[in-house]
Length: 390
Image 1 (cartoon, one colour):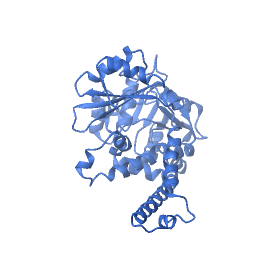
Image 2: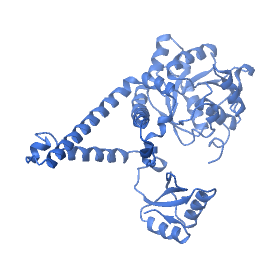
Image 3: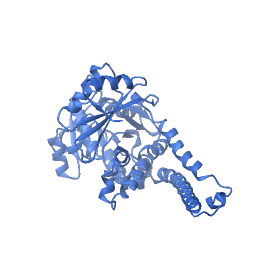
């Protein structure tokens, strides 16, 4: 992928575009549009943030602009998004205004109550981001290949909806049309609750023995990666989308309680058996309830079923791949050499996952290839001098 936006040809978005909020998303919008030659005006309550966004190439400070914007992109936290959108609609009567907040129903409801001109407002939400924040983390290709939800209201004009769709396409994203409620329920399930789960798991590590943390593998890193996110931003997101988040958390709590109960029952049964109490069924405390081992198995199996529904490569059906794990020396150029050798073997790389072995000068590269090609790849890589993990 190139360093710039992935769109090809001239931009459909007509500038100037005013970006209000120059954090990760706002500055990335600016960088992507500037790469296409679109004029971008930057605004932020923090003068320092504006100057940083300017210095990374996301646009020019709005104070220096003389032409009114035709499109305004509000990249503010959800708890203030409606206020900012309303102010921008009033300040620029000739502009379409969108926002990129991850909650849509609350924003739309506040705008309706305030009597804002909804014909020029279309909510949106690019499904892209990072645990890093601020303009220095921005990238012009942040949205490339990602869904960008476009949330118009019944009052939104066709021209306004088209302007936001064009913005998404210009930045390399794929527009997805949803209503506000459907959007909020979807992101509660695929984004907001995973953030809560990651934070809760990561919080268990704060008092962990360092010797235990030395055993950390890629599984822990995968589960906790987003736990490094901004607490203030996520407080705003979760409280604004509480209506959609709470039912998912309640269902998760029910499942967790059932699993805890099953494991407690199994623990009691094991202790009773070790003590020689005799009545295995009574000692297990099974009664008429489900057998604890069955509950545990169902929990893991349900997770398998859920994972299988996550879209795979290019958004298609998730596939099972052959995985070859290679020991890669932690030295410059070694990973590139591995990828070149995979290519030289004539085998397409489907997925790649890299894990670092604690206190070891090697990494573990898990190379996923199409089923049936794993054995051939192992032979090819071994012949080229690579060590494989068992």
